[in-house]
Length: 509
Image 1 (cartoon, helix red, strand yellow):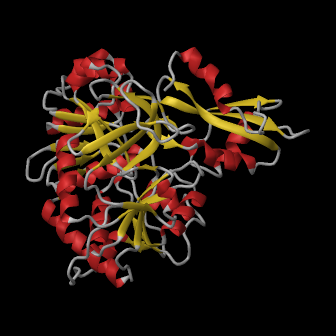
Image 2: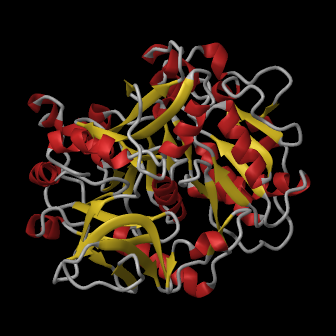
Image 3: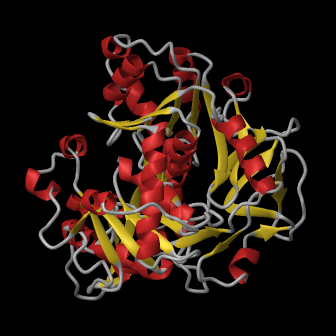
């Protein structure tokens, strides 16, 4: 059962609705291999659309609801989306972002989401002339053909080019499905027909919450949707529903620990059995404090959208090996490789490569195989992270993708921000990187070199960027340089500019 506010969706209702969605999509011309996009907050239709698309063999493509119209249009065009299902309040925020050939179904924004985001009633209604999701669904007959091979969702993950890439997986084979079930049991403690209760508080457009939410729904657990993360609200839900399982990210731990002591002790969290986190490094002291508070139920996995969760560790291992990301799971593999492609030994630092036996194959949508070869070593894939394995096989991450910023568990690629900055009149050059942030782990910083005679200030640059990119990507800190330091080749010395911020913080990640 899935619960959102006062609304519920039982397992039987979800299964019936996914067949009706599949029938409707089929009659709209959606074929196997096509894309069905969603721009939805945490809401019941997310499950119906995703599962319905899979019945007809189509890829569900979740879109970050904080994207600008330009960013939304890019993903719709790149994925070749035939249909967009979108919350009514979000539709108004993407004028010009929907190509004319994309059919739009509008979901009325429910009261619990409106309250969480302080939305007016008018924004939550389906605009005149648009197709209402609920009415459309009620008119659909179930899909009456044999189910197609069901692919996974196509998650868009940013890259160093600044443009997101869709991770397109082949429909899983029987052995793929068996392996995925094993990984779910190990990393998430979610198993079919084994009772559990969870709160989905992370945004379901993101790779890991998306995966977790779909596993939980398919396996028949009780899934409570929290429209957006609220620390005390989560504690209240844990006590009220006797929550047993959670997926969180480290910034949520930080905000939970920041609650006053009397608030933290007000709620009973003894029902928790398995809490897993990922998406960003968790400071050692934060992990230890959470284990002290919630008990030895805190677990962590590490991987990538392309690889799945390959590395895992428990609370006991976190206390025994502070700072580790864990060890490879059964049938998982990790290798540390130098620049020449040689595998390194214990305590030697290099590029981290990962993989799981019999994991579904993937490609980058619309890209050639050369893109895969750039990140492949033997049968393993790298996300660009740097680290080492100790003598016991535990992985320690020392640095991340050279330029990527992880702010509050969200991946931000500076190249995209730099491209938008360089389009601004008066900007001669720029460099963007992450700097330490006590709350988010990292925040975005930009150093800007102005063209001769240009007069720009920080508010003007931020205002420009808010029209081009999602608000969370806009640099929190902007510094102006007379001339950015460069190598002889002309390349900006990003690491030299970045280093003082991290030296002052006493950490590198």
